[in-house]
Image (cartoon, rainbow, N blue to C red; front, side):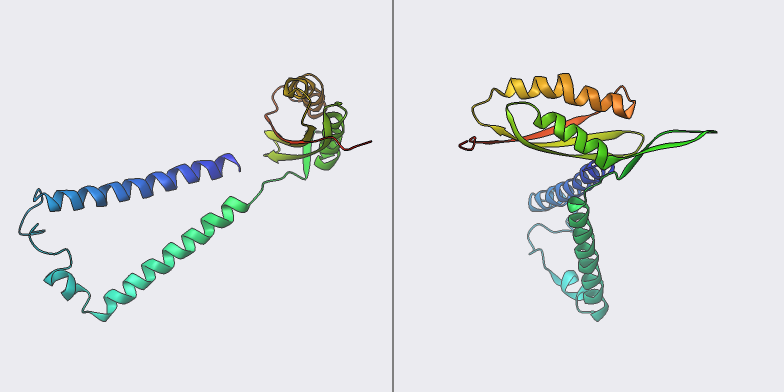
Length: 188
């Protein structure tokens, strides 16, 4: 999930939370007779005469249906954004008058996965590059021996695999996320 998606999630959830808090506060204020009694009398049911009159017009139901459709479309879009994975296919390392230096992301990720798998504690590894071409991020998925110390895996990644990838990408900073699954070693 990229930064824009995370920011959108936070903003959307904050707006929905704020709307629900305002509606809940209004309901509590109405029940405690803190609202103007000529506008929202606490003694009357919530669905009173003015509400029934509003929904007596056929256009009110169409408006309600339209609002429901908009909510469904927004909800489906939100679900689609959650499932989207941002993978990089290539990275431009340098461009100038002499030409452009571009590398395949799959070559770099295969190399870092092979380096991660070189650790005796790691049974298998795979990697992806995400983010943007200017600010790439590496995602590693490791299957490790359940008996191996996790510090050994961490030291191998921090001391060998990630620094080599930084060097290959010619960057000082490379955020990395490693998802480690533990598995018993196979009988040899």
